[in-house]
Image (cartoon, rainbow, N blue to C red; front, side, top):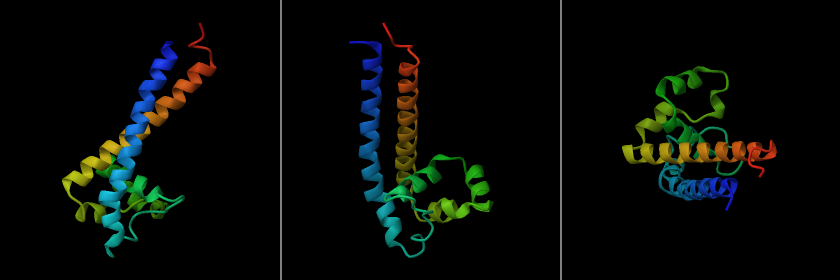
Length: 125
C-alpha cells in the first residue's frame, strides 16, 4: 500500500468522524437553537441547507475577539451572533461545536492538500 493511500485512508476516517459530529451537533445543539425564538434569527445566513450548523460551530471555535470583530463588520448578517449563542448554550455544546468544526476544517484542507501533492507528483513512484 502506497503512502498516498495510507494518508488518504487516514484523512477519510477523520472526514467520516466529522460527518457523524455534523449530524450530532445539528440534532443536539442547532435544533435547540432553531426552536428558541430568541436565537432562531441569530444563526447567520444559510447559503445551503445545513450551513447554519457550520455557522454556529464556527462561533464556538474562533476566539471571542474575532467573533466580536465579525459582529461589528458590515457582513455580520452572514455569521451567527456569538453573544446570543453563548447565552443560550452550555459548555458541552461549545466543546462539541469546537471539535466538529476543527475536525471538518482540518480534514477538508488536508484532503485538498493531499490531492494537490499527488497532482504535483510528490507521491509518484
